[in-house]
Image 1 (cartoon, rainbow, N blue to C red):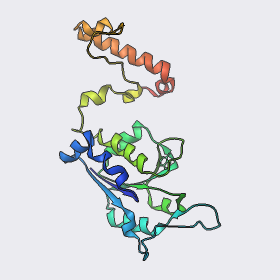
Image 2 (cartoon, protein in one colour):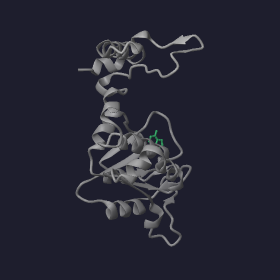
Image 3 (tube, rainbow, N blue to C red):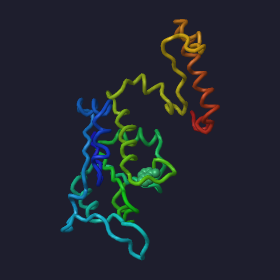
Image 4 (cartoon, protein in one colour):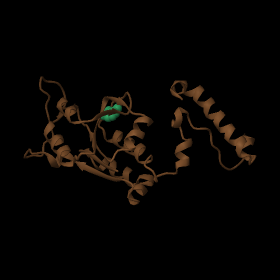
Amino acid sequence: MKIDILTLFPNMLDGFLNESIIKRAKENNLVQINLIDFRKYSLNKQNKVDDTPYGGGSGMVLMCQPIFDAVDALKDDDTTVILLTPDGKTYNEEVAKSLSLKKHLIIICGHYEGFDERIRSIVDMEISIGDFVLTGGELAAGIITDSIVRLIPGVISEESLDSESFSNNLLDYPTYTKPEEFRGLKVPAVLLSGNHKLIKEYREKEALLKTKNKRPDLLEKKD
Ligand code: ADE
């Protein structure tokens, strides 16, 4: 998979994308991630990418030209173009799974006061990471990239993916590690029993109980 992130602030994401699991996925050629400063596509003498809004109002608005030209230059027949915006479809694990199957993503990060409405005409999806407003799309692009890359086969183990929160619309079961008792808090005895059948039953029950208590809305979607 290839992910091209169009941003005016590539340094905001550079460190994040070069650590831990994403770094390893890149080294193992499971994903290629390019941070592209779309200012370089500006045809303006001063490399301008934004201007004042028609009709008046505060702030600067990202112009069509640099973004249209960047997308034209990077796009092929297998590309999904994503625009990050607080008025997009709310992101979740289901969207992450569908995006992890794509060959090539272009993710456009907005910044400043907003973007020219006509930019929406060249995108396939508009995504929001939640009902709040960020100063720009960079952190949203990082979050989306992280959640997609970990789902690419070979990046993390299938077993971890099967049992984690939101798989089959359940939250994850509780986990514990050594020691068996810490400040009077004990690990449930069944996990020390070595009985795999009982452990499986315990985990299924706990996942269901946790989901019922914390996210009953997920159970309505469960098959
Ligand atoms: N840009 C600004 N706020 C955003 C949000 N909530 N999601 C995605 N992109 C954004």
